[in-house]
Image 1: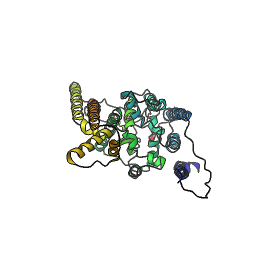
Image 2: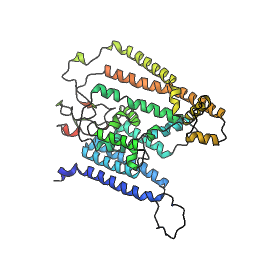
Image 3: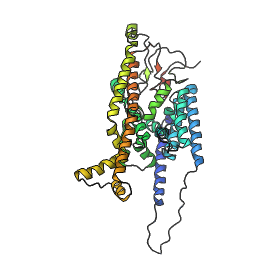
Image 4: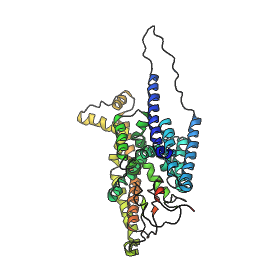
Length: 426
C-alpha cells in the first residue's frame, strides 16, 4: 500500500510548501511603514523577521555539500531514482522556498564574471563556493547538482508527468541557446551592465511570490510545458547547465545505465526524456559508424574558421549589445533630446538633470562602455564558435559503441533509466 502512494507524497508535500509560503508572504505584508496620522487607535505589536545572520550563508554551503554528496551516493552507488526524487524535494523546499532562490549557483556565474573584470567589486565567499562546489562534484560524479540539488531543476522535475520525444534536429538547435545565454550573461556582468540571469529567472517569482507578472507567467508556462517536454529551462535556457555539461564530460565517475555489462536489450532506449542515451552500434554496419580519417585535418580548420567568424560578428555587434548598459541607454536618450527634440522623461534622465554630471562626461562614459563591449564581445564569439564547431565535430566523428551509455554532458543523472535495466548488481 505504501509503494502505491509513495510517488504521490512528493507532490502533496510540494503543494503544502506553496500554501505555507503563501501564508508567510501574507504575514510579511504587514512590514510596510505605517501611515502617519494622529488617532487614538493603538497598533498591535508585531514580531518582525530579522535579517539572516552571515552564519546562515555558511550553513547553506554545508547543506549544499551534504546534498551533493548524498545525491552522488544515490546516483553512483545506491542507484535509487526514488532517493534522488526525495533529495530534489528537500532542495526545492530549502534552496527554493526557504532561501527563496538565493543563494544560487546558476546566478553566481555573474558574480564571478564581475569579480574577474571589476576590481571594485568584492565577491562574497559563499557566492564563489556555490559556483565552484557543484562544478567540482561534476568533475567527480557528473551532473549530480542538476539531478537533485538545483531547485530550478527540482521544480521542473516534479511536473514531468508525460514524456514527449523532441526531434533531434530541433533539440540540437534549442540546445545551443544556453551557450548564447551564458556568453551574454558573462559579457553583461563583466562590463557592469546587467545581471540578466537573475533578472529573467522564471522561477524566483514563484519561490518569493513576488515578481513582475510577465516573469511569473513565463515560469508557469515553463512548468506547463515541462509536463510534456521535461525540464525545458534546464535543456534550452540554463547557462550554468552549460558549465555542468562541459565539466561532466571529464568526470572521474558517472551514472551508468546498467550496474554490470550491458546486454543490449534496448529497454532503456526510450526511457530518457532528455535524449541523453547514446545507443549501441553493436548491430550496425561498421562502415556506417566509423568515419574516414581524411577529415581529421579538415575539421580543426573548419572549427577555427567558425570561431573567427563568430568573433568578428560579435565585435561588430558590440555597440548594439552595449545598449543594455544604463549609461549607454541614458546617453542615447539625452542625445535624442538634443538632436531631435524628443524629451527625455525617464527616471534616469530626471536624476541626471538633478546631478552634477555634465553631458560630456556622460557621452565619454558611453564611449568607454562600448570599448569594454568591443574588448569582450569577440571572446564571447570565439566561445560560441568553438562550442558550435566542436558540437559539429562530435556529431560527424565518433568511435562505434558496443553498449548503451549516457551522454556525459547532456545526462542530468536523474536515474530514470535505472528501473528499465533488467541487469541486477552482483
